[in-house]
Length: 128
Image (cartoon, rainbow, N blue to C red; front, side):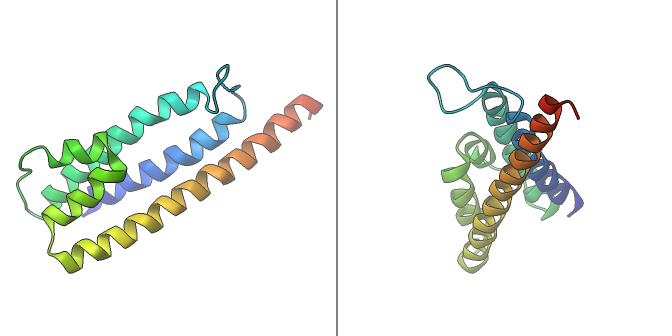
C-alpha cells in the first residue's frame, strides 16, 4: 500500500506549500483567496482521484464506474461515497473518521505553512 500513502503525503505537502505560498501572493481583487488557492484546487482534485484509484488497485479491486472521478471532482462528498461504496460499512465509517482527521491535519499544515510564509515574508521585507 505504498502508492496510496505517497499520494496522501503529496496531498498533505501541497497544503503546506500552498500555505507558505499564500503569504507571498496577494488576494485576488474582491475575493478571499489568491491565485495560489485557484491553482491548488485542481491539484487537490487530481490527488484525490489518484488516491482513490491507487487505493482500489492496492486492495486488489478493479476500479469500477466513475466513483474515483466523483471522489476527485467533489472530494467533500465523493470521498465519503467512495468509502461507502468500496468497503463494508464498519471499514467505511473508520475510513471516514480517518479522512476527517486527515483533513484537519492538512488544514493545520496549511495554517502552519501560512505562519511560516508570513514570518519569511516579514523577514524579507525587513531586509534580513
